Length: 307
Image 1 (cartoon, one colour):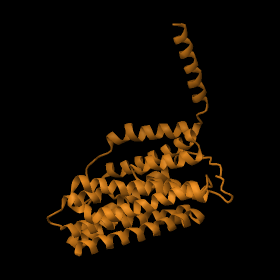
Image 2 (image 1 turned 30 degrees about the vertical axis):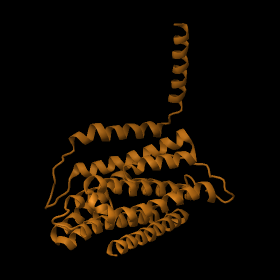
Image 3 (image 1 turned 90 degrees about the horizontal axis):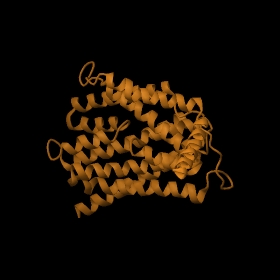
């Protein structure tokens, strides 16, 4: 019993020390995120409002929760694991949910001078690589027939993004001289910018769905590209369900790849508008390399299939 009591006392001292290190911005952000998820979300209506297809308030609020959650996870990872590992692990976890959210968070950190732009851009590359793997996994589960058209481009882009992240961290260094700049995040996330961007993404998705439903097959491609600005997974699932009718394999695969390409363009725009400077240049280089690798792999797969 004495040993157990000593262990409890030691653990309590460690917990007290951990609690003492929590700052007010961290506590406030945690409470806001909990309220967004468990207090507000249950009462937000899930029905569409306005002319068809309408705006789904619950869908918009879920986007806001994802954006805030990804930012909070990245902040916590840096606090626990340190700058280099924290940024990459946070991006890896965030990429499982939304690489767009990771990009927005990283862009804001870069703009505020919270860390090395190269390291933050490497986090975007990690999240992007995870998003490419997500697309392959969804297609494999929903419609394996599309893998021969989708998987080569996604795998090539994933390898390029992963190589960029590894090269940045282990070979190029994050600052001149190869040493990492100290990272001090001032706040896990800001509520109103998160909500504002969620509303913007929700409106983009509604407009894109309207185009897709209005203009048929050609509109499906345009709509997929528009929705892809905010969310690739929903497009991948929807297009996979439309095979073999009303869409053929080529049409569905083209829509999925268009959504992925537009999502990368969206992240590039976020990097340029929000992050700017060196961070934007790093993300632009990574994005261009992924586009080229994906196009080359798609061309090769189509050539082999035609042969």
